[in-house]
Every structure is written in C-alpha cells, then in structure tokens.
Length: 125
Image (cartoon, rainbow, N blue to C red):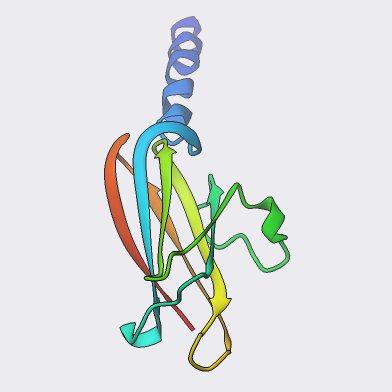
C-alpha cells in the first residue's frame, strides 16, 4: 500500500506537467485567418489565445479572460511565441473588409512538442 502511494505521488506530477500550457517554452504557433471557403484573408482581426482549453470556452467568457491577444497582419497572419506544450483554444474575431460583416471562428489545438513552429488555418464566418 505504501509503495502504491509513493508511486502515485511520483507519477501524478508527470501526468499534469506534460500539458502545462502557457509561455516560457520554445514553441511558435502561426495562425492564418481565412474567410469561409478560403476565399481571402481577414486583415487586422483579433486573435485570442486561451491556455489549458481543450474546447471553446463559451460565449459567456469575456475576451479579457483569454491569456493572449494579437492583431493579424494585412495578410491575416498572427503569431504566438514562446509557448509550452499544452492545450490551447484560438478564437478569432474581426470584420470582413469587403462586406463589413462581423466574422468569428476558432479551434482547439494541442502543442505536443516543446519546440518548433506550427501553422494552423482558421476559417471565419
């Protein structure tokens, strides 16, 4: 019984440390924001990043509760740097420059390796 308790105490931190989302790592997440159907980009949209989220946190959560926010460049590209392995939710809000309509989209993402660049595409509607 004592051996089981000791093993549990030793292994428990390993289970939770393997997905400790946040800054302080060496991963880079490149987000490419496209209009629905991939028919153009959404320049200047706001791209939010929520740590330790495996799904959409819900509309009732204020945007200020997201951990990071960046503006996409003219090509609809945003970048988050120095991330650790872990679960993240990326939310995009903006305005279609052609129609003036509000657009949103999002995706959950799991960074599995502590270093390297990742590229994801988020289509907004």
